[in-house]
Image (cartoon, rainbow, N blue to C red; front, side):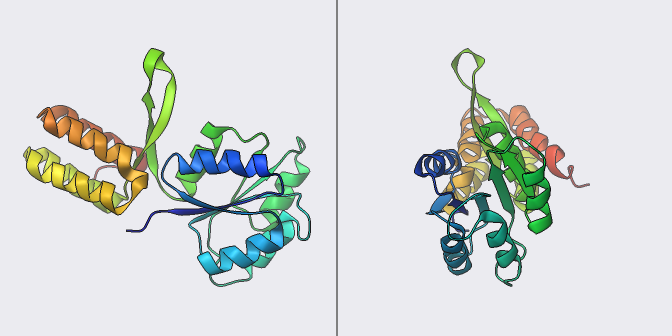
Length: 211
């Protein structure tokens, strides 16, 4: 499993840096573009898992870029989030009509971004609590098939296999590193009940535990 790729298009370097920091912090490999045409050309060749584009950009604006992306077979189904500093509803309506899957207002709120990304890419995650109860980085769960496999093994109490599966998850995709670390932590503590509950909570948060 390759590392998840994301693309950030914005003519303001600081905005691109903020998005790259947010998405890179949860394991995405982030590429950047400074205008819509550059985003279109690069995204069509790199085929990212997610595109986040500003609406207002030089050369080719975000709306035109989104329309062009949707005409390409390699990008027609790629999740796209449009962002704009406009506080009105016009940019949102135009973005969705152009083919964006979601819209966020600037400055981009990290929690709102992660919520949209989780929905669009079908990622289930929870937030680790830092010191003092502050919200930390999200724990991103793997796809349903892998969760179900982990759930079945967790019920048997085989901590050796859980550790192996956790190591495989972390090695295959850095996005799931925090999730894998939590699995290993519970396996090392031989806390079977907590382990089952942890995996089960992610299954229930997505499509439910299979019968």
